[in-house]
Image (cartoon, rainbow, N blue to C red; front, side, top):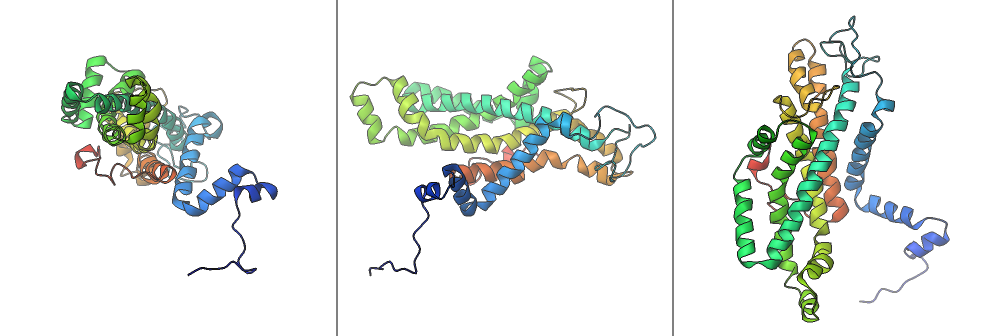
Length: 312
């Protein structure tokens, strides 16, 4: 059945038409994406808000995070102190904003380090195959046999405290997942015809991996990074809650949660308010945004994150 166009059926608005109407191509693409994926846009807005709060902390925070208001100890949330004050009279909101800078920095650097190294490892392991693949996967299985927190604490105890030690410890816990996921993608890609054609014309193994395989792994890499950023924030906060890791002067999220336990009876709203920044980026922003912007299934959708991976 052929449907003929009539005057009542307006033509579709293309990018060229949008440019003629004065609408930028980028704006047209963003408008189309927001209409098609409203959840992804909402998650991206949440991420942007959290990132801006962390970056602009000196301008956004209402008070000095270390200033003590001795006459206003353990105050409930009010117009003056939006999240109240702690047992030393310090503004909880200001300390959360400054503490979020540390957690976001550690999470981003550790996930980038672990996912990039793990992805390169997975591509090389799958492409080379044979003994290299066999031995590398046994090493990955050894790393995955340790619980996440135990493995991170082992590296912290062995290497000592400090921000870079925490980054390396969290990156090691993210490494096996990057290896496994990217390896599975590479195993499918290396059997395609264009890879055989590149090999037939004399391209080296390094060139084939860099030019023909790695670009096809970018969607999986982005989903891994966004999914693991939330987990890295929880791990970093958990280490701070246990009293190991980073000790910034204005505190970090895990330390705020630990200190908030002291106020769960006197000021329950204050105690509860210090825990939501730990879980908000993971549940609301990172994973939905990564899946919507890439169109690639998330690790939990593909069965790549097990129950043992949950830090909480």
